[in-house]
Each structure stands twice: as structure tokens, then as C-alpha cells.
Length: 304
View 1 (cartoon, rainbow, N blue to C red):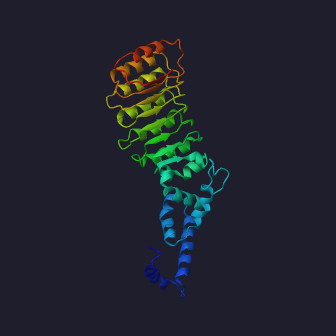
View 2 (cartoon, one colour):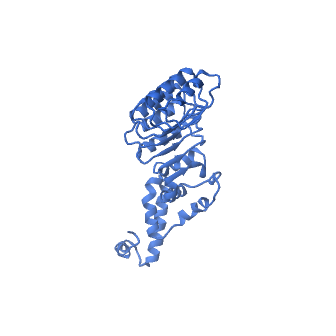
């Protein structure tokens, strides 16, 4: 490494005058930090930060640690970080087992800049919470591209209360149908998903059905046609869904009937079903009541 005196001795011939080992370290660290400032890509700067650590120079890390030590949410809100400080932040978070276990963007700043800057951390995390983070189409595309580069790591993803719409969900579907994707929990509450987006989502899950155990599509508009497609997924013997939430999703009698038929044909996995928003007088309520009396029904929790 750079901090080894034997390596520094080899480099001394490049210097015009004799200097101490300490001076060499300081000059080298200054040169490395300049290179970090010149390179806006955090991923390309990671090795340079390792070199700084070898030289016992953690000054850039200490600059961002001040913000990380805050215990409130949105701790970077209103803070203007330089490119070098963003790179330092990425390096610190990538070396935090706690952050890589569960990343929550709202701890830092629910802005598109923060999302894009921290993509190297996001794609290395096992659980990701980006709920209510105002993700635009640009941010959505960059996010899905990053997640697709490391699909086997991710187990939980919360994208609720953003507005990707059907086009954004189609991009997400490309991730879900990847055979290397091992996602277990997906939350897409209030994401402006219509019939077209629901169709793309279900198609992806049917091509790779064996990992997802929890799906939340509440406060969207899949329509009866979308619910029928979802029901076809539930009928798949490889489907492992245990919890399904579709509250306030405008499900009609046809959608309810399709769901119940699916649960009767493959009753062994689903234990929780949330259909809140269905009116008591709806015919679907009677169908659900009949399902609960079925001895093969494994539902432990039904919300209506």
C-alpha cells in the first residue's frame, strides 16, 4: 500500500529534494484528495478513499460525519455538499453494515440529488425504503438501472407514495422478471398504477414467482382486469405470496370473484388479505364470507 515505507522509498527518486516520510504522506494525501475533487463519480473514488485511510487521512470522512451524527430525519436537508463530500458520504455508508442492511433515504434528504448521489449505497443495500421521496421519471430510471446491476442482493423494496405511473412500473417489472432477483417484499402504495402497469407487474412476477412473499398495491387503480391477472398469479403453484394488500383499490364483484377462485385453487400460502374499501353491501363481501368458511382456506387475517 501507499503507507508502506518500502514503497515510499521507491517513490523518493521522483522528488527533487529529500523529504521526510511524514511529508511524503501529506503530499500524497493532498494529491489524492485533489483527484477525488476532480472526479465527480463516488464509485470511482472508493479506491482513493482506501488509499487515504492507509495514509491515516480521514479529513473528508470527518467533514460528512458531522451530519451523520445527527439523529433526526432529513439530516442533509438544506446542506450543500461538494462532490468530494458526496463521495466521502458514499464511502462511509458503504462501510456501514447498519446502512447496508436497511437504507432509508428520508434519513438524509428526500431529494432527487440525494437519491442519485447515493445510488452506489442503494444498490448495495438489502432493504430499501424510498417511500414519499418525490422520485421523478429521471430518478426512477436511474434507480431501476442501479438495482438491475445487482439484483440478487435486494430483499425488500418500498417505493410507496411516489408517482412512477404505469411507465415507471414497467421499468420496475424488468427488474422483477430477472431470474437473479430475490425480492421478498414489495410496497407500491399510492403509486398511480393503473391496469396497464398492473399487467406489466403481474407478468414479471409470473415469470419469476418463487421469492415474493409480501405485495402491497393499496390505493392504486388496477381495476377488475388487473385483479384478475393478480388472481392468475395466486393460482400459480410456485407463487409464495403470504400477504397481499389491495385496500382502497376500487375492486368490484368480478375482481373479488377472481381472487376467491384463485385462493380456493391454491390455498396453502396466503395468510393475510387486505381488501379494505369494499362496501359491506357489495356482493364480494358475501363471497369472502363463504371463503372463510372453507376448511381449506388458510387465511388468518382478512381486512374488509
